[in-house]
Amino acid sequence: MQSEMKQAELSLFERIGGTDNIRRLAKYFYRIMDVLPETYGLRKMHAANLQESEDKLYKFLNGWMDGPDLYEQEYGHPMLLRRHMSFQVDIAARDQWLLCMDMALKEIVEDAQLRVELSDAFARVGDHLRNQPN
Image (cartoon, rainbow, N blue to C red):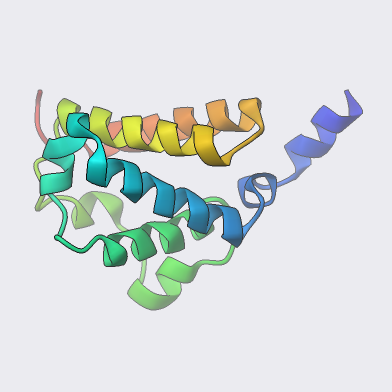
């Protein structure tokens, strides 16, 4: 019970292990997206070289998990919905993104409860970013 209380006091950033594990998560996410046939539609939305996208995801996730606001320092407020309006984000794109993220979480995050919490939070963000009806 006491360890659960201590976990609740820590930020997501602390619980995931800080910037090193967030960097690994972003790297693994894009590695999966780049090769998984089921995510071909999502992959087509990205540039041929995924390094910039990986770096932006890494920087965004740091601040989103209550760590350093690296993304905001470099690019300003994330404004996720506005920044994704040029892409057709439908249910399929959302689900492909979540598939990659869930696979990356399983690879990087040892704490099963944290994986569930992050997966649920990413699903809410994915729903928020949808700009297509289907």
